[in-house]
Amino acid sequence: MKKKTDILIVGSGAAGLYCALNLPKDKKIVLISKDDVESSDSFLAQGGICVLKTEDDYEAYYEDTMKAGHYENRKESVDIMIRSSHKIIDDLVLYGVDFENDRGSFIFTKEGGHSTPRILFHKDVTGKEITSKLLAQVKKRDNVSIYEYTTMVDLITEGNTCFGAVVADPEGDLTTIRADYTVLACGGLGGLYEHSTNYRHITGDALAIALKHDIELENVDYVQIHPTTLYSTKPGRRFLISESVRGEGAILLNKKGERFVDELLPRDRLTEKVYEQMEKDQMPYVRLSLAPIEEEEIRGHFPNIYKRCLEEGYDVTKEPIPVVPAQHYFMGGVWVDSDSKTSMKQLFAIGETSCNGVHGANRLASNSLLESLVFAKRAAKKIRDNYQHISHEPQVDLTTYPDMETLKNEYRDIVLQEIERMKKKRKERTENE
Image 1: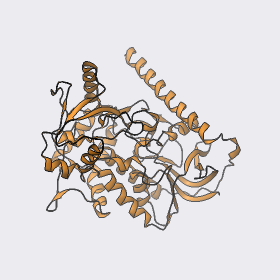
Image 2: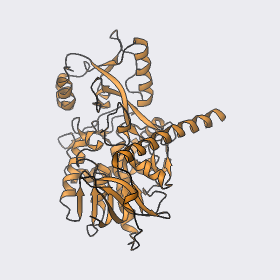
Image 3: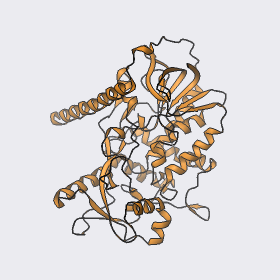
Image 4: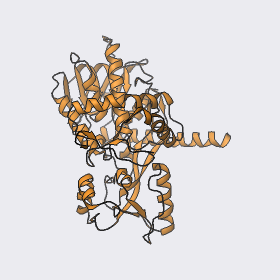
């Protein structure tokens, strides 16, 4: 069943939903989700969302973000994100997001790499709180149609212009969705890794498709490892132990029960220290102790972590838990400018799929939700202010596509090969400097 819409959004995470809410209500919007609409990594974000508390904190926030990113960040994007943070929080509150507060004043927490507490949160399920409220608002919009279990197979292009996408419906049948504008909000690539905090179906398809159509990518070898996920021998997604646990005082212990590191190092540096300690101890994990945190605080601030650990046989109020690094976030992606425009006409990319340069070589904790929302809103504004209707419809031969399993493996190989190619290229450049 062929479809025609004004704007196609590929992905149902916070970026895609917020983009839809900022687009004109008189435009028809189709939003597709590869799985059910709630199975996006945005729902899994635990720690919180950063905000510029006061103007006095600007320089410190900017420096914290740049330092964590090894100063490879795009300065303009970092400035835009920080300056836009207040308006984003105002919008979220209007949509019903309930951030922790004390008699009407926000409560801020601190995470690794931050020089001061500047992170708003909702218990330890901030991503779920934000994304569920955005989803509820989108469902109220008569101009937005949501299609679950619908997978982007390819982009419809001619020359350097995008005209929509080829998709597979829930039965696996191919069809086309024509659109004046297409927005990629497909998430990252954690499903390509054996150990990841991401949903398994999020496999970087947009990157493979972008390469296929000569759409510019950036920093695809910058993949962030989170230093603390709950150790398990079971297959599947790894359960994240939020950075805010360490921000509130939890400590990392070696095999002898000794503290061995500053727990608030940026994620990449802390991950290195954890791996080093695992090698010294000849153990597949280190331990995280929440003993420095009051039991009431654990139950109140981290109820989901407390419950999940109990289910795995650990009472965090009484004993350390085994933790191990796992793939968590993707700093690279489809190159975009400060308005989230890609190198292809009529095509935008937002959220973890995109690379606007905010994160540089390593993301600062709790910048992901903010960055996604800031640049999703900018994409919507750019589309709204420069809207152009496209009447041309290139021909698409759906018989040329292989079966979905073959295509899935093909795209997986393309992405992994590109990551390795970029790693090698970066290494050669460094050696020649």
